[in-house]
Length: 456
Image (cartoon, rainbow, N blue to C red; front, side, top):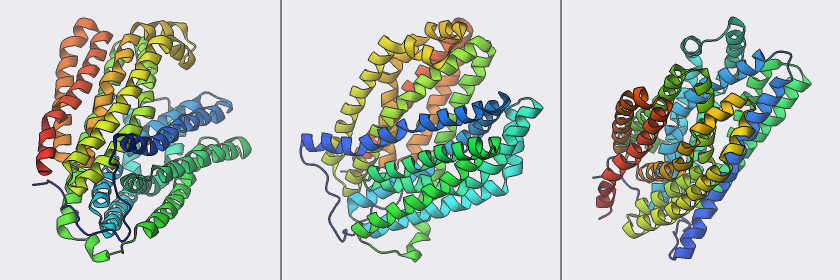
């Protein structure tokens, strides 16, 4: 039995969900899906760079720190609700593959409803959330005051930000990552333009940066819904309001999202714990690890694209109940993901020191980061499996296994830190992080045969 919603079986009004039948066709489809995601990801550093640049023109460095501190709060907050993107893409891809255009609409409607409800709840809880966040992320009174001003403005974007997760999940699920690219570029470019206008033009300081993010999120919602409308006109189907509140399907959706939420909390905790342990090793090591972690996050720019591709392609094959197509989707996406991972390893091996030097100009930090660069050189070939197995399990909405695998991996990680940190210090910490990556992939791989049994 499949753990989540029953696979839809109604035909699309227009047949558009066919999957490739040749190896060349699979590779081409992978790039059609992955390419726009990679391009979208490349625009993300632009926003961060502009945020830093515009507040960098304000009279005191405390403004930069305030925006950075406030952004961290929202990164963790929204990262925790990533299930709205992942769960939606899995359900929609399955409905797309099964040929049920109406269920695609219903799956999106459920996700949008949950996103709006959570977004309103976040706004209602903004005072205790701010108190909790800034009690953990301590800073000077001036720094916290400015960061809270940023928070107080940007928090009103919560419903829009979460709705955008659901929209992106739907667009990925129906294999239209070009539209997803359009939404993300709209969001990021509007953010850049409004940053420049509000901060440099109107002199609104950190509140201007927060307002730029808020307005950009809502503009992206309208653009995303317009793309959704165009795609739904092409797909056909009809809105069925009564189906949105079907008890069995709502229960399944909540079940999946709750498990993905727990899984995501595991990821957040693991990286937070890594930073916390870094602080115990001194400010220099903390700064060096932060530089290297930028390089680790940079992996997502390429590998996310192939993870999204396997979500869409394998999810559709799963909805079609085709084991051969499911395997073909995994094989094609994994091949390209491995090629990209190999390219990252080569780049880090040949140019890693140059990348470190580009990130920081502090010589002591450069030297300290270079000492641990070998961990980043091997990381791509290990990290790639995390992205792939996550995509496979999202595609098949196997959220219980994702939750359990993450809990086991984090447990292994904590044991590794306890054993190796006292012995090898920062090398032990990085080795423990590698164990976490391996554990996340291995524990899910153990569960993989369950997915194929569902396709018998």
